[in-house]
Length: 562
Image (cartoon, rainbow, N blue to C red):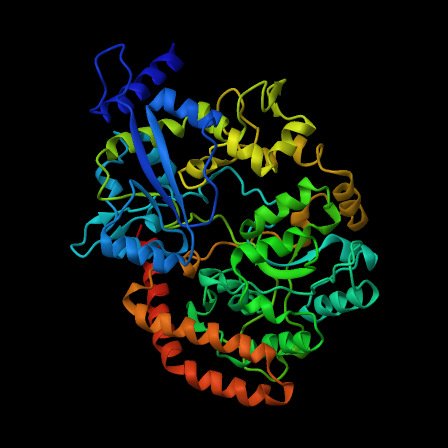
Protein backbone atom coordinates (compact mmCIF):
# COMPACT_ATOMS: atom_id res chain seq x y z
CA UNK A 1 0.00 0.00 0.00
CA UNK A 2 2.79 2.41 0.87
CA UNK A 3 4.41 1.75 -2.53
CA UNK A 4 1.10 2.45 -4.28
CA UNK A 5 0.59 5.69 -2.38
CA UNK A 6 4.13 6.81 -3.16
CA UNK A 7 3.58 6.11 -6.84
CA UNK A 8 0.30 8.02 -6.87
CA UNK A 9 1.92 10.97 -5.10
CA UNK A 10 4.77 11.07 -7.62
CA UNK A 11 2.29 10.88 -10.49
CA UNK A 12 0.27 13.73 -9.03
CA UNK A 13 3.36 15.88 -8.82
CA UNK A 14 4.22 15.19 -12.45
CA UNK A 15 0.69 15.90 -13.65
CA UNK A 16 0.64 19.16 -11.71
CA UNK A 17 3.49 20.36 -13.91
CA UNK A 18 1.60 19.74 -17.16
CA UNK A 19 -1.05 22.35 -17.94
CA UNK A 20 -1.62 20.74 -21.36
CA UNK A 21 -3.24 17.61 -19.90
CA UNK A 22 -6.60 16.93 -21.51
CA UNK A 23 -9.73 15.82 -19.78
CA UNK A 24 -9.55 12.55 -17.87
CA UNK A 25 -9.06 9.59 -20.19
CA UNK A 26 -7.64 11.69 -23.04
CA UNK A 27 -4.02 11.73 -24.10
CA UNK A 28 -1.63 14.62 -23.81
CA UNK A 29 -1.70 17.03 -26.70
CA UNK A 30 0.95 15.82 -29.17
CA UNK A 31 3.98 18.09 -29.50
CA UNK A 32 7.22 17.99 -31.47
CA UNK A 33 10.35 19.24 -29.75
CA UNK A 34 13.24 20.56 -31.81
CA UNK A 35 16.61 19.36 -30.51
CA UNK A 36 20.15 20.57 -31.24
CA UNK A 37 23.09 18.40 -30.17
CA UNK A 38 26.57 19.94 -30.26
CA UNK A 39 28.26 16.79 -31.54
CA UNK A 40 28.14 14.93 -34.85
CA UNK A 41 25.62 12.12 -34.99
CA UNK A 42 22.82 10.44 -36.85
CA UNK A 43 19.08 10.80 -36.20
CA UNK A 44 17.12 7.72 -35.14
CA UNK A 45 15.10 5.69 -37.61
CA UNK A 46 11.44 6.57 -38.04
CA UNK A 47 10.39 3.29 -36.40
CA UNK A 48 12.74 3.53 -33.40
CA UNK A 49 10.99 1.56 -30.68
CA UNK A 50 12.07 3.67 -27.68
CA UNK A 51 11.00 6.93 -29.28
CA UNK A 52 7.69 5.26 -30.08
CA UNK A 53 7.28 4.49 -26.36
CA UNK A 54 8.13 8.11 -25.49
CA UNK A 55 5.52 9.30 -27.96
CA UNK A 56 2.90 6.94 -26.51
CA UNK A 57 3.52 7.94 -22.89
CA UNK A 58 4.45 11.63 -23.16
CA UNK A 59 2.92 12.69 -26.48
CA UNK A 60 6.34 13.92 -27.57
CA UNK A 61 8.24 13.46 -30.81
CA UNK A 62 11.60 14.99 -31.68
CA UNK A 63 13.28 16.70 -34.61
CA UNK A 64 17.05 16.32 -34.24
CA UNK A 65 19.78 18.55 -35.56
CA UNK A 66 23.30 17.25 -35.00
CA UNK A 67 26.42 19.37 -35.34
CA UNK A 68 27.82 19.67 -38.86
CA UNK A 69 30.87 21.90 -39.00
CA UNK A 70 32.53 24.12 -36.39
CA UNK A 71 30.72 24.16 -33.04
CA UNK A 72 31.46 27.77 -32.04
CA UNK A 73 30.53 29.10 -35.48
CA UNK A 74 27.30 27.09 -35.49
CA UNK A 75 26.32 28.31 -32.03
CA UNK A 76 27.30 31.87 -32.91
CA UNK A 77 24.91 31.88 -35.86
CA UNK A 78 22.10 30.44 -33.76
CA UNK A 79 22.63 33.08 -31.09
CA UNK A 80 22.82 35.92 -33.63
CA UNK A 81 19.60 34.79 -35.31
CA UNK A 82 17.93 33.65 -32.07
CA UNK A 83 17.44 30.37 -33.89
CA UNK A 84 17.02 28.30 -30.75
CA UNK A 85 15.67 24.75 -30.60
CA UNK A 86 13.48 23.68 -27.70
CA UNK A 87 16.20 21.44 -26.25
CA UNK A 88 19.66 22.93 -26.65
CA UNK A 89 22.91 21.03 -26.08
CA UNK A 90 25.91 23.30 -26.63
CA UNK A 91 28.47 20.57 -26.02
CA UNK A 92 31.87 21.90 -24.99
CA UNK A 93 30.82 25.45 -25.87
CA UNK A 94 27.71 25.54 -23.71
CA UNK A 95 28.90 28.78 -22.08
CA UNK A 96 28.21 30.53 -25.40
CA UNK A 97 24.50 29.76 -25.30
CA UNK A 98 24.31 30.60 -21.61
CA UNK A 99 26.00 33.99 -21.97
CA UNK A 100 24.01 34.58 -25.17
CA UNK A 101 20.77 34.41 -23.19
CA UNK A 102 19.45 31.37 -25.04
CA UNK A 103 18.36 29.32 -22.02
CA UNK A 104 15.73 29.56 -19.30
CA UNK A 105 16.50 29.18 -15.61
CA UNK A 106 15.54 25.59 -14.76
CA UNK A 107 15.19 26.48 -11.08
CA UNK A 108 11.92 28.20 -11.99
CA UNK A 109 10.56 24.71 -12.59
CA UNK A 110 12.68 22.35 -10.47
CA UNK A 111 12.24 22.15 -6.71
CA UNK A 112 12.07 19.61 -3.92
CA UNK A 113 8.28 19.93 -3.81
CA UNK A 114 7.42 19.97 -7.53
CA UNK A 115 10.06 17.64 -8.96
CA UNK A 116 11.39 15.42 -6.16
CA UNK A 117 13.36 13.11 -8.46
CA UNK A 118 15.14 15.89 -10.31
CA UNK A 119 15.82 17.74 -7.08
CA UNK A 120 17.24 14.66 -5.36
CA UNK A 121 19.35 14.06 -8.45
CA UNK A 122 21.16 17.41 -8.18
CA UNK A 123 20.87 18.21 -4.46
CA UNK A 124 24.19 16.79 -3.24
CA UNK A 125 26.14 18.70 -5.90
CA UNK A 126 24.06 21.87 -6.05
CA UNK A 127 26.97 23.98 -4.76
CA UNK A 128 28.83 23.17 -7.97
CA UNK A 129 25.80 23.18 -10.26
CA UNK A 130 23.94 26.34 -9.23
CA UNK A 131 25.41 29.69 -10.25
CA UNK A 132 24.44 33.31 -9.62
CA UNK A 133 23.18 35.66 -12.30
CA UNK A 134 24.01 39.38 -12.51
CA UNK A 135 21.30 40.16 -9.95
CA UNK A 136 22.58 37.54 -7.50
CA UNK A 137 19.76 35.04 -8.14
CA UNK A 138 20.35 31.29 -8.17
CA UNK A 139 20.39 29.93 -11.71
CA UNK A 140 20.71 26.51 -13.31
CA UNK A 141 20.67 26.63 -17.08
CA UNK A 142 21.80 23.09 -17.91
CA UNK A 143 21.08 19.94 -15.97
CA UNK A 144 24.09 17.57 -15.98
CA UNK A 145 24.02 14.68 -18.41
CA UNK A 146 26.67 12.63 -16.59
CA UNK A 147 28.57 12.46 -13.33
CA UNK A 148 25.85 12.18 -10.68
CA UNK A 149 26.27 8.50 -9.83
CA UNK A 150 24.60 6.46 -7.10
CA UNK A 151 26.79 4.46 -4.72
CA UNK A 152 30.53 3.92 -4.91
CA UNK A 153 32.36 5.11 -8.01
CA UNK A 154 32.64 2.35 -10.62
CA UNK A 155 35.95 2.32 -12.46
CA UNK A 156 35.96 -0.79 -14.62
CA UNK A 157 37.66 1.15 -17.40
CA UNK A 158 39.09 4.62 -18.04
CA UNK A 159 36.29 6.70 -19.54
CA UNK A 160 38.24 9.94 -19.69
CA UNK A 161 41.71 11.05 -20.79
CA UNK A 162 44.67 8.74 -21.32
CA UNK A 163 47.38 7.73 -23.73
CA UNK A 164 45.86 4.88 -25.72
CA UNK A 165 47.65 2.00 -27.39
CA UNK A 166 46.38 -0.96 -29.39
CA UNK A 167 46.25 -4.23 -27.49
CA UNK A 168 48.15 -6.03 -30.23
CA UNK A 169 51.15 -3.75 -29.69
CA UNK A 170 51.37 -4.70 -26.03
CA UNK A 171 50.79 -8.38 -26.84
CA UNK A 172 53.55 -8.27 -29.47
CA UNK A 173 56.05 -7.11 -26.81
CA UNK A 174 54.95 -9.82 -24.35
CA UNK A 175 52.64 -7.56 -22.31
CA UNK A 176 55.06 -4.97 -20.91
CA UNK A 177 54.23 -2.42 -18.22
CA UNK A 178 54.40 1.01 -19.85
CA UNK A 179 54.56 3.97 -17.47
CA UNK A 180 56.44 6.77 -19.25
CA UNK A 181 56.06 8.59 -22.54
CA UNK A 182 59.51 7.42 -23.64
CA UNK A 183 58.58 3.78 -23.10
CA UNK A 184 55.34 4.37 -25.01
CA UNK A 185 56.90 5.83 -28.15
CA UNK A 186 59.78 3.38 -28.04
CA UNK A 187 57.32 0.46 -28.12
CA UNK A 188 55.31 1.94 -31.00
CA UNK A 189 58.50 2.55 -32.97
CA UNK A 190 59.76 -1.00 -32.43
CA UNK A 191 56.38 -2.47 -33.38
CA UNK A 192 56.26 -0.53 -36.67
CA UNK A 193 59.87 -1.47 -37.47
CA UNK A 194 58.87 -5.13 -37.15
CA UNK A 195 55.34 -4.73 -38.60
CA UNK A 196 55.22 -1.79 -41.02
CA UNK A 197 51.80 -2.76 -42.41
CA UNK A 198 48.69 -4.63 -41.35
CA UNK A 199 47.55 -7.91 -42.91
CA UNK A 200 46.05 -5.98 -45.84
CA UNK A 201 49.28 -4.18 -46.61
CA UNK A 202 48.10 -0.84 -45.19
CA UNK A 203 50.88 1.07 -43.37
CA UNK A 204 50.43 1.54 -39.65
CA UNK A 205 50.22 5.05 -38.20
CA UNK A 206 52.21 5.36 -34.99
CA UNK A 207 50.46 8.22 -33.21
CA UNK A 208 47.48 10.37 -34.19
CA UNK A 209 46.73 13.84 -32.79
CA UNK A 210 43.21 15.21 -33.21
CA UNK A 211 43.33 19.01 -33.47
CA UNK A 212 39.91 19.96 -34.85
CA UNK A 213 37.88 22.64 -33.07
CA UNK A 214 37.32 22.08 -29.32
CA UNK A 215 38.77 18.59 -29.57
CA UNK A 216 42.22 20.15 -29.70
CA UNK A 217 42.50 18.96 -26.11
CA UNK A 218 44.16 15.91 -27.70
CA UNK A 219 47.02 18.23 -28.67
CA UNK A 220 47.07 20.44 -25.59
CA UNK A 221 46.08 18.50 -22.48
CA UNK A 222 48.66 15.69 -22.19
CA UNK A 223 51.18 17.84 -20.33
CA UNK A 224 49.08 18.18 -17.17
CA UNK A 225 48.65 14.39 -17.01
CA UNK A 226 52.33 13.73 -17.58
CA UNK A 227 52.88 16.04 -14.62
CA UNK A 228 50.61 13.89 -12.46
CA UNK A 229 47.27 15.72 -12.42
CA UNK A 230 43.76 14.79 -13.59
CA UNK A 231 41.93 16.90 -16.16
CA UNK A 232 41.81 20.61 -15.31
CA UNK A 233 41.54 21.80 -18.88
CA UNK A 234 44.25 24.32 -19.74
CA UNK A 235 45.72 25.02 -16.30
CA UNK A 236 47.80 23.08 -13.79
CA UNK A 237 46.68 23.28 -10.17
CA UNK A 238 48.25 22.17 -6.91
CA UNK A 239 45.43 21.59 -4.38
CA UNK A 240 48.08 20.98 -1.72
CA UNK A 241 49.65 24.44 -2.11
CA UNK A 242 46.74 26.82 -1.61
CA UNK A 243 45.35 25.88 -5.03
CA UNK A 244 48.26 27.40 -6.91
CA UNK A 245 47.14 27.71 -10.55
CA UNK A 246 49.12 28.39 -13.73
CA UNK A 247 48.91 27.81 -17.46
CA UNK A 248 51.12 24.85 -18.34
CA UNK A 249 51.51 24.99 -22.11
CA UNK A 250 54.13 27.76 -21.95
CA UNK A 251 56.25 26.21 -19.19
CA UNK A 252 59.59 24.39 -19.54
CA UNK A 253 58.01 21.12 -18.39
CA UNK A 254 55.66 21.30 -21.41
CA UNK A 255 58.59 21.72 -23.79
CA UNK A 256 59.74 18.19 -22.97
CA UNK A 257 56.54 16.65 -24.36
CA UNK A 258 56.47 18.58 -27.62
CA UNK A 259 60.14 17.86 -28.18
CA UNK A 260 59.28 14.16 -27.89
CA UNK A 261 56.49 14.61 -30.44
CA UNK A 262 58.96 16.39 -32.72
CA UNK A 263 61.29 13.39 -32.50
CA UNK A 264 58.38 11.02 -33.21
CA UNK A 265 57.41 13.09 -36.26
CA UNK A 266 60.94 12.96 -37.63
CA UNK A 267 60.83 9.16 -37.36
CA UNK A 268 57.59 9.01 -39.33
CA UNK A 269 55.43 7.93 -36.37
CA UNK A 270 53.18 10.99 -36.78
CA UNK A 271 51.60 11.94 -40.11
CA UNK A 272 51.46 15.58 -41.19
CA UNK A 273 47.79 15.14 -42.13
CA UNK A 274 46.87 14.47 -38.51
CA UNK A 275 46.99 18.22 -37.81
CA UNK A 276 44.34 18.99 -40.42
CA UNK A 277 42.18 15.87 -40.20
CA UNK A 278 38.52 16.45 -39.41
CA UNK A 279 36.96 14.54 -36.55
CA UNK A 280 35.23 12.25 -39.06
CA UNK A 281 38.53 11.54 -40.80
CA UNK A 282 40.17 10.80 -37.45
CA UNK A 283 37.42 8.35 -36.48
CA UNK A 284 37.62 6.74 -39.92
CA UNK A 285 41.36 6.13 -39.48
CA UNK A 286 40.92 4.65 -36.01
CA UNK A 287 38.13 2.43 -37.33
CA UNK A 288 40.50 0.79 -39.83
CA UNK A 289 42.69 -0.53 -37.02
CA UNK A 290 45.84 1.09 -38.43
CA UNK A 291 46.34 3.81 -35.78
CA UNK A 292 48.48 2.33 -33.02
CA UNK A 293 48.24 5.13 -30.45
CA UNK A 294 46.83 8.53 -29.57
CA UNK A 295 46.01 10.77 -26.62
CA UNK A 296 42.26 11.22 -26.30
CA UNK A 297 39.28 10.57 -24.05
CA UNK A 298 37.50 7.21 -24.30
CA UNK A 299 34.07 8.67 -25.03
CA UNK A 300 35.47 10.73 -27.90
CA UNK A 301 36.30 7.74 -30.12
CA UNK A 302 33.48 5.40 -29.09
CA UNK A 303 32.27 5.05 -32.68
CA UNK A 304 35.69 3.76 -33.74
CA UNK A 305 35.75 1.27 -30.87
CA UNK A 306 32.29 0.07 -31.84
CA UNK A 307 33.37 -0.37 -35.46
CA UNK A 308 36.40 -2.41 -34.43
CA UNK A 309 34.31 -4.58 -32.13
CA UNK A 310 31.70 -5.08 -34.86
CA UNK A 311 34.46 -6.36 -37.12
CA UNK A 312 35.79 -8.55 -34.26
CA UNK A 313 39.13 -6.72 -34.53
CA UNK A 314 39.58 -6.92 -30.77
CA UNK A 315 43.37 -6.82 -30.99
CA UNK A 316 43.07 -3.38 -32.63
CA UNK A 317 41.02 -1.87 -29.82
CA UNK A 318 42.76 0.25 -27.23
CA UNK A 319 44.08 0.15 -23.69
CA UNK A 320 44.20 3.38 -21.65
CA UNK A 321 47.60 4.02 -20.12
CA UNK A 322 48.38 6.61 -17.43
CA UNK A 323 51.76 7.87 -18.58
CA UNK A 324 53.90 10.31 -16.61
CA UNK A 325 57.25 12.01 -17.06
CA UNK A 326 60.27 10.18 -15.73
CA UNK A 327 62.96 11.97 -13.73
CA UNK A 328 65.15 12.59 -16.76
CA UNK A 329 62.37 14.43 -18.59
CA UNK A 330 62.15 17.16 -15.98
CA UNK A 331 65.70 17.14 -14.63
CA UNK A 332 66.66 20.72 -13.81
CA UNK A 333 63.17 21.99 -14.70
CA UNK A 334 61.42 24.19 -12.15
CA UNK A 335 58.25 22.56 -10.80
CA UNK A 336 55.02 24.53 -10.30
CA UNK A 337 55.39 24.43 -6.50
CA UNK A 338 58.28 23.44 -4.22
CA UNK A 339 56.50 20.29 -2.99
CA UNK A 340 55.25 19.08 -6.39
CA UNK A 341 55.35 15.31 -6.90
CA UNK A 342 54.74 13.55 -10.20
CA UNK A 343 52.39 10.65 -9.46
CA UNK A 344 49.92 9.12 -11.93
CA UNK A 345 46.39 10.47 -11.39
CA UNK A 346 44.38 10.18 -14.59
CA UNK A 347 41.07 9.20 -12.97
CA UNK A 348 39.36 11.83 -10.83
CA UNK A 349 36.80 11.38 -8.08
CA UNK A 350 33.11 11.53 -8.96
CA UNK A 351 32.28 14.78 -10.72
CA UNK A 352 29.04 16.23 -12.09
CA UNK A 353 29.31 17.31 -15.71
CA UNK A 354 28.72 21.01 -15.05
CA UNK A 355 27.09 22.90 -17.95
CA UNK A 356 27.12 19.77 -20.12
CA UNK A 357 23.76 18.37 -21.21
CA UNK A 358 20.44 19.83 -22.24
CA UNK A 359 19.12 23.26 -21.47
CA UNK A 360 15.66 24.48 -22.44
CA UNK A 361 15.68 27.49 -24.73
CA UNK A 362 13.78 30.73 -24.24
CA UNK A 363 11.94 29.93 -27.48
CA UNK A 364 10.41 26.77 -26.05
CA UNK A 365 6.62 27.05 -25.63
CA UNK A 366 6.29 24.11 -23.24
CA UNK A 367 9.11 23.95 -20.67
CA UNK A 368 6.71 22.39 -18.15
CA UNK A 369 6.19 19.42 -20.46
CA UNK A 370 9.93 18.86 -20.77
CA UNK A 371 10.53 19.13 -17.02
CA UNK A 372 7.67 16.73 -16.33
CA UNK A 373 9.08 14.32 -18.90
CA UNK A 374 12.55 14.46 -17.32
CA UNK A 375 11.03 13.92 -13.89
CA UNK A 376 9.27 10.76 -15.01
CA UNK A 377 12.24 9.60 -17.07
CA UNK A 378 14.28 9.43 -13.84
CA UNK A 379 11.93 6.68 -12.62
CA UNK A 380 13.21 3.12 -12.42
CA UNK A 381 10.92 2.11 -15.26
CA UNK A 382 12.34 4.61 -17.74
CA UNK A 383 15.97 4.31 -16.62
CA UNK A 384 15.75 0.57 -17.24
CA UNK A 385 14.28 1.23 -20.68
CA UNK A 386 16.99 3.73 -21.60
CA UNK A 387 19.87 1.68 -20.19
CA UNK A 388 18.74 -1.90 -20.71
CA UNK A 389 15.90 -1.74 -23.24
CA UNK A 390 12.78 -3.92 -23.29
CA UNK A 391 12.70 -6.93 -20.97
CA UNK A 392 12.82 -10.33 -22.72
CA UNK A 393 13.75 -8.53 -25.94
CA UNK A 394 16.94 -6.65 -25.10
CA UNK A 395 17.72 -8.23 -21.72
CA UNK A 396 16.34 -10.79 -19.29
CA UNK A 397 16.01 -11.10 -15.52
CA UNK A 398 17.18 -14.12 -13.53
CA UNK A 399 17.09 -14.28 -9.72
CA UNK A 400 16.85 -10.51 -9.50
CA UNK A 401 19.86 -9.95 -11.79
CA UNK A 402 19.70 -7.94 -15.02
CA UNK A 403 21.40 -10.02 -17.69
CA UNK A 404 22.00 -10.14 -21.43
CA UNK A 405 22.85 -12.81 -23.90
CA UNK A 406 26.01 -12.43 -25.94
CA UNK A 407 23.93 -11.28 -28.92
CA UNK A 408 21.98 -8.76 -26.84
CA UNK A 409 25.16 -7.25 -25.43
CA UNK A 410 26.77 -7.14 -28.88
CA UNK A 411 23.82 -5.05 -30.08
CA UNK A 412 24.94 -2.21 -27.77
CA UNK A 413 28.04 -1.78 -29.96
CA UNK A 414 26.09 -1.92 -33.24
CA UNK A 415 25.43 1.64 -34.42
CA UNK A 416 22.77 0.61 -36.93
CA UNK A 417 20.92 -1.41 -34.28
CA UNK A 418 21.07 1.49 -31.82
CA UNK A 419 19.46 3.90 -34.29
CA UNK A 420 16.45 1.58 -34.33
CA UNK A 421 16.41 0.42 -30.72
CA UNK A 422 17.98 3.05 -28.45
CA UNK A 423 17.14 6.68 -27.71
CA UNK A 424 20.71 7.91 -27.36
CA UNK A 425 20.00 11.38 -28.79
CA UNK A 426 17.73 12.21 -25.87
CA UNK A 427 19.15 9.95 -23.18
CA UNK A 428 22.82 10.85 -23.64
CA UNK A 429 22.15 14.53 -22.93
CA UNK A 430 19.35 14.21 -20.35
CA UNK A 431 19.66 13.67 -16.59
CA UNK A 432 20.18 9.98 -15.86
CA UNK A 433 20.91 7.37 -13.24
CA UNK A 434 24.46 6.04 -13.10
CA UNK A 435 26.36 3.76 -10.79
CA UNK A 436 24.51 1.18 -8.71
CA UNK A 437 20.79 0.64 -8.32
CA UNK A 438 20.35 1.27 -4.61
CA UNK A 439 16.65 0.60 -4.03
CA UNK A 440 13.78 -1.56 -5.15
CA UNK A 441 13.49 -4.89 -6.90
CA UNK A 442 16.82 -4.59 -8.72
CA UNK A 443 18.99 -3.15 -5.92
CA UNK A 444 22.58 -4.29 -6.31
CA UNK A 445 22.53 -4.27 -10.09
CA UNK A 446 24.33 -1.64 -12.17
CA UNK A 447 22.34 0.95 -14.10
CA UNK A 448 24.63 0.63 -17.09
CA UNK A 449 24.89 -2.83 -18.69
CA UNK A 450 28.61 -2.40 -19.31
CA UNK A 451 29.18 -2.14 -15.55
CA UNK A 452 27.10 -5.19 -14.62
CA UNK A 453 29.66 -7.74 -13.34
CA UNK A 454 28.03 -10.74 -15.01
CA UNK A 455 28.11 -8.91 -18.34
CA UNK A 456 31.43 -7.12 -18.05
CA UNK A 457 33.30 -10.30 -17.20
CA UNK A 458 30.96 -13.06 -18.32
CA UNK A 459 30.36 -11.71 -21.84
CA UNK A 460 33.80 -10.25 -22.43
CA UNK A 461 35.27 -11.57 -25.69
CA UNK A 462 37.91 -14.27 -25.36
CA UNK A 463 40.67 -12.03 -26.69
CA UNK A 464 40.13 -9.46 -23.93
CA UNK A 465 39.84 -12.17 -21.26
CA UNK A 466 43.18 -13.64 -22.30
CA UNK A 467 44.71 -10.16 -22.60
CA UNK A 468 43.75 -9.21 -19.04
CA UNK A 469 44.88 -12.61 -17.75
CA UNK A 470 48.32 -12.02 -19.26
CA UNK A 471 48.62 -8.93 -17.04
CA UNK A 472 46.99 -10.54 -14.01
CA UNK A 473 44.25 -7.88 -14.14
CA UNK A 474 40.50 -8.26 -13.68
CA UNK A 475 39.44 -5.16 -15.61
CA UNK A 476 40.90 -2.56 -17.94
CA UNK A 477 40.66 0.06 -15.21
CA UNK A 478 43.53 -1.78 -13.51
CA UNK A 479 46.00 -0.25 -15.97
CA UNK A 480 45.77 3.06 -14.07
CA UNK A 481 45.72 4.10 -10.44
CA UNK A 482 42.42 4.32 -8.50
CA UNK A 483 40.57 7.66 -8.55
CA UNK A 484 42.17 10.58 -6.78
CA UNK A 485 40.02 12.57 -4.34
CA UNK A 486 38.11 15.26 -6.20
CA UNK A 487 39.48 18.73 -5.47
CA UNK A 488 37.18 21.32 -3.91
CA UNK A 489 36.94 23.25 -7.20
CA UNK A 490 35.92 20.15 -9.16
CA UNK A 491 37.76 20.24 -12.48
CA UNK A 492 38.85 23.66 -13.70
CA UNK A 493 37.71 23.16 -17.32
CA UNK A 494 34.16 23.54 -16.01
CA UNK A 495 34.79 27.12 -14.86
CA UNK A 496 33.16 29.82 -16.97
CA UNK A 497 35.80 31.60 -19.10
CA UNK A 498 33.46 34.31 -20.41
CA UNK A 499 35.06 37.20 -18.47
CA UNK A 500 38.35 36.54 -20.28
CA UNK A 501 36.89 35.20 -23.51
CA UNK A 502 39.05 37.39 -25.76
CA UNK A 503 42.28 36.49 -23.97
CA UNK A 504 41.33 32.81 -23.73
CA UNK A 505 40.49 32.65 -27.43
CA UNK A 506 43.85 34.20 -28.31
CA UNK A 507 45.57 31.79 -25.92
CA UNK A 508 44.02 28.82 -27.74
CA UNK A 509 44.62 30.22 -31.22
CA UNK A 510 48.34 30.58 -30.57
CA UNK A 511 48.54 26.99 -29.32
CA UNK A 512 46.55 25.61 -32.23
CA UNK A 513 48.82 27.35 -34.73
CA UNK A 514 52.24 27.02 -33.14
CA UNK A 515 52.23 23.57 -31.54
CA UNK A 516 51.84 21.68 -34.86
CA UNK A 517 54.60 23.86 -36.29
CA UNK A 518 56.84 22.92 -33.36
CA UNK A 519 56.11 19.22 -33.78
CA UNK A 520 56.94 19.32 -37.50
CA UNK A 521 59.92 21.70 -37.48
CA UNK A 522 63.58 20.88 -38.08
CA UNK A 523 64.92 19.68 -34.70
CA UNK A 524 67.75 22.19 -35.00
CA UNK A 525 65.14 24.98 -34.98
CA UNK A 526 63.05 23.62 -32.12
CA UNK A 527 64.59 25.62 -29.26
CA UNK A 528 64.32 28.95 -31.08
CA UNK A 529 60.76 28.24 -32.19
CA UNK A 530 59.80 27.20 -28.66
CA UNK A 531 61.17 30.47 -27.24
CA UNK A 532 59.23 32.43 -29.87
CA UNK A 533 56.06 30.50 -29.01
CA UNK A 534 56.44 31.25 -25.30
CA UNK A 535 56.98 34.95 -26.04
CA UNK A 536 53.96 35.10 -28.37
CA UNK A 537 51.58 33.40 -25.98
CA UNK A 538 52.80 35.19 -22.85
CA UNK A 539 50.26 38.10 -22.77
CA UNK A 540 47.17 35.90 -23.22
CA UNK A 541 48.62 33.20 -20.96
CA UNK A 542 49.14 35.69 -18.14
CA UNK A 543 45.64 37.17 -18.46
CA UNK A 544 44.01 33.75 -18.62
CA UNK A 545 46.21 32.28 -15.88
CA UNK A 546 45.60 35.19 -13.50
CA UNK A 547 41.85 34.93 -14.06
CA UNK A 548 41.85 31.17 -13.46
CA UNK A 549 43.81 31.53 -10.23
CA UNK A 550 41.08 33.76 -8.79
CA UNK A 551 38.28 31.68 -10.35
CA UNK A 552 39.59 28.47 -8.79
CA UNK A 553 39.74 30.10 -5.37
CA UNK A 554 36.18 31.38 -5.81
CA UNK A 555 34.98 27.87 -6.62
CA UNK A 556 36.67 26.52 -3.51
CA UNK A 557 35.05 29.18 -1.33
CA UNK A 558 31.65 28.54 -2.92
CA UNK A 559 31.82 24.84 -2.12
CA UNK A 560 33.10 25.43 1.42
CA UNK A 561 30.32 27.95 2.07
CA UNK A 562 27.64 25.41 1.09
